Amino acid sequence: MFKEIELERIDISGEVPVEEPERQYYYMAKAKRIVEERSAQAGRALTACIKTFGCQMNARDSEKLRGILENTGYRIVEQEEADFVLYNTCTVRENANLKVYGHLGYLSNLKKKNPQMVIALCGCMMQEPEVVEKIRKSYRFVDLVFGTHNIYKFAELLVTAFESQRMVIDIWKDTDRIVEDLPSERTYAFKSGVNIMFGCNNFCSYCIVPYVRGRERSRKPEDIIHEIEELVKDGVVEVMLLGQNVNSYGKNLEEPVTFAQLLRRVEQIEGLERIRFMTSHPKDLSDDLIQVMKESEKICPHLHLPLQSGSSRILKIMNRKYTKEQYLALAEKLRAEIPELSLTTDIIVGFPGETEEDFQETLDVVRRVRYDSAFTFIYSKRTGTPAAAMENQVPEDVVKDRFNRLLSLVQEISQEMSLRVQGQTLPVLVESVNEQDANLVTGRLANNLVVHFPGTAEMIGKIVPVYLRECRGFYYYGETVNAQDGTNSRN
Ligand code: SAH
Ligand code: SF4
Ligand code: F3S
Image 1: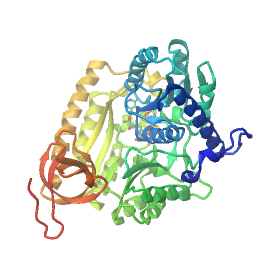
Image 2: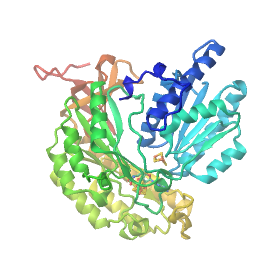
Image 3: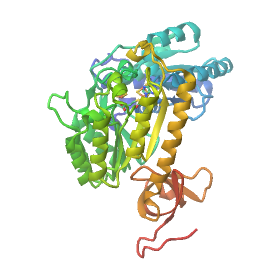
Image 4: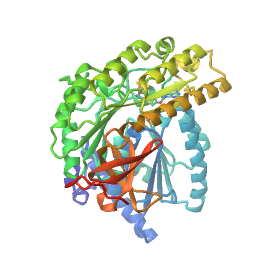
């Protein structure tokens, strides 16, 4: 494991190792020396800031990048007024993309004040050749650009950027490798994302992810188990298993393993209390998975099951590989098998050619499934995807109107669904001290609902029983329960 490596012991005057991860350890040691020199010159510790745009997978990547920066001697800070700034970008919708350009304008001003500042960009947006071209031409103050496939090489790229006077750009088209045993610096002490697979093979016709994240690759079960065991030793009680389509986990391994089998093994890890996962593609959700969820003590009764559209006609053009009826049957089976299950989803409004009738089908599914919550998105045209070339794009005002109608339905149902657990006493994993009221702490139920209740910072990372007193729309106010006599401690 990485923790046992002492970077000082690595001889950086010797030959560069060819094998990974040893090669990256070497470059970490080398980067550390450079950071030490620069910090001696500056007479203070150098600071680094990583900003994450995008999904949990990007957030997990950022933890790995942060681990490397910390090991090379940077002090990690929240603000972008730092000596090293790294943006881990997202491009799933145009908004995500525009946000990054907005932030870059701000960084350019900061760099004018601190010319020693190093600016790096990575993540999904950098896998788009047009983006890199634009950065090369119009954002010349950027020092380092890399993509999603060579993120494990960050230490090496860092050294190259330190030693170069020009913008360093290193983007790979794809990769089939997974490098294990690199450091990571978690955002939360008590919970962590764990990648179980990378990439996506589904090519939903609207989606850019398969182009920027490459083909599906699963990590070996033993590597995943080992990582979780180490995390648990380090205080983690909840893991979120991450993949674009976890239900197809393990299909391409030399010794194939199903996602349900993997979950059974993760369940055995002593000290681990909660298991979450995302995202589940409806087309691959097996009965075996439902069975494992039903039997498990640790898997949270929460399933994120993206619908995207309720119209079978649109689903076909989206290349989702299920119909409205199949989706509804699956949701019904899940509700019957696991009654306390919280079902959440993603829905896109305004996919090319979507008619009012198609949209009504989506509303119909929402009414029938009754999601605990749903992320609703306005369709965003992504260059290079089949949907972007479709001619019948829906006018903006029509999409906005549909979006608003969908949102109010989703919210109405979500509030009703949240009420389901009112008056019950359920375990809450405490995540933080409440931002508005320091007398309260904030945590999550197994079904992912947020609960605020009286508590102190010492409770962070603990799972405590909480009486769910009052539902305020999408969250609860609760009270701690005295475990011995079951009485509530009123605040
Ligand atoms: N792999 C996951 C989704 C990852 S992207 C899955 O298959 O469910 C997260 C969500 O972004 C998607 O579920 C979809 O609802 C939304 N999304 C993806 N591409 C989009 C686009 N071009 N426009 C609008 N929303 C999009
Ligand atoms: Fe995109 Fe579809 Fe892959 Fe999800 S399954 S990442 S929506 S292509
Ligand atoms: Fe965005 Fe990449 Fe995730 S495009 S949603 S950060 S996989």
